[in-house]
Length: 275
Image 1 (cartoon, rainbow, N blue to C red):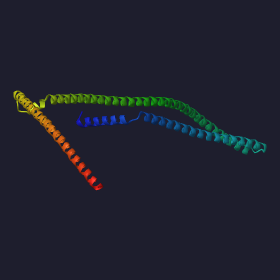
Image 2 (image 1 turned 180 degrees about the vertical axis):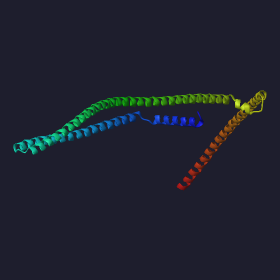
Image 3 (image 1 turned 30 degrees about the horizontal axis):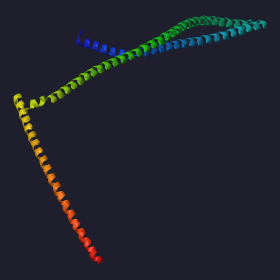
């Protein structure tokens, strides 16, 4: 097979595949049913035309039969009038009409036979069309049911795939959350243990312990100093309070003496004024 032949074959295959996907079986069945109905209508029309032709021949036959009777009456009347010549002419016309009648009867019989055949074919075709219509409706119902089932299955399949993706996403989110929670707990533990401070410092463990010891000793020394200072301040405050109390007592006594002297002076002035 040459390149062009193979290419043509592939193109035809692609076109057939596209047509198969685009074809709707229900539309094809409806189209076939309509075509059969059109053919049945044509058969009925043919039968009607044939019947019309037969009826025309039958009308023509009746007219000829009437002429035959007419010529027969003419011949009798001519004989009664002793006109044998006229009687002969009337009988000759009668014979001609009789020949035409026989020929028409033959044609009418042929048309009747053809009509009967067409009617039988029409009845058979109509029966087949009705049978096809029943099968068509059944097939359409099956196809629509299968199509609906297929859509439901495809939808369910899509939902299943989507749910599987959602499930995987949830699993990944849960794993990520667990990982972040574990990392956060680890960071908190390292912060509490001072591991980050140790990592950021250049001192080794011995230096850190010595520094801690020095810091503790300095704190103890400062605490003792603070205690000593607090004790001294308390003693001084007590003696100052005692001195202040003595001064207050002396001041109160002096004030009383002054008030007594002022009272006496006031009494003396009152006595002088009365004199």
